[in-house]
Length: 430
Figure 1 (cartoon, rainbow, N blue to C red):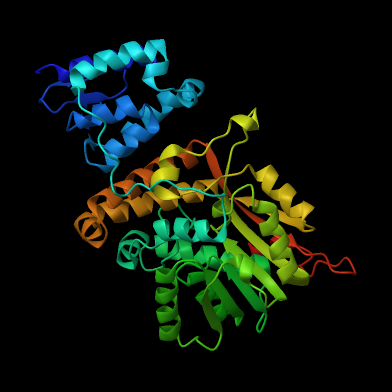
Figure 2 (cartoon, one colour; figure 1 turned 90 degrees about the vertical axis):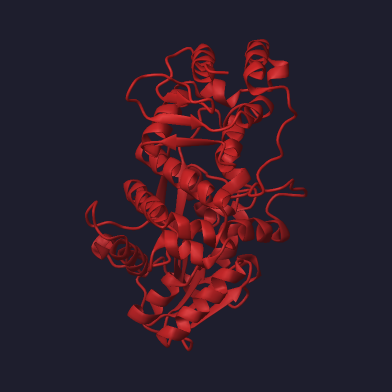
């Protein structure tokens, strides 16, 4: 077959109803599409069989993770052009059905089958989460989900995140500020928003590799308890804390936040953790954190959010993210997050969007991964490294195009007197 690229381009344009904005290079060496455009490389016909059996995002993701499709040139440009095309046809993409049940897709499937070959569907790559059962966000299921995402090797995360080992949005003074400086500024921003004082008790929910806990103890004199479900994170954090000589000020536990019983705390930081909670548990999350704070205690909730849907009943979790990145993760609109915190009794005092900062953060993480690609592959697996490269690059574009955002919500548990305990000019932290 010496014309596979042309046949694929023609078929894709008929289905999309628009010119294909990228060039295609097929396994037979043929090329088709706009000259000079970024190129999508289809390395193996097996990728097409994945699309036949899982049309849309998940089929493409499986082919990418398996190394059957790739990009020659600017990854962001290819993702941006393809995502933009699908975004304009979002309803079609969301409503995509199996080709055996849709007449138009069935006809296209027959033509694609001629190119792909009549073989059964390939098994999913090993990096994909296997079938899950039971209720969402039980403690057991959440432990498994967290392990899938975070227990992929501390060496791998060191290559991607850099020395800060902070796996959440940084806070940039300038677009080209060093990532290490921006991550230090972010955890310091959280400490200042919380108004931490020497000797105060801080609970860091989803403490990761210990960066927030170390900064709060070292720079503000706080007594910190950090909880995580990842054993690898906890071991790494404890080693760092010992190296800093802070073992008398910081305790790291492998513990579900729902099992913390040693309140009250003066402050709680939750940075990039609430996305794992899910809508079915978010009120419980808010209630638990409220109960763990003393009257006048402060919560800083740093959380990715999505744009609200016109019809919220149509919202569904991203197939690729759910299967390969954050199993059972879920994004909520900002309004719902603030509303739930208020329903739990919190007084919302400040909301700040850091959307552009997360796009900058992700681009630096992608750069780190690409710069250390051979070491990253050795530290985990080729498929896992490809998952993270695609996930982070696509996420950067989503933040840049305002499809998702990230917000810091400062909330207070009211005291009996009605005093918040915060500075009169709240934003003096700037």
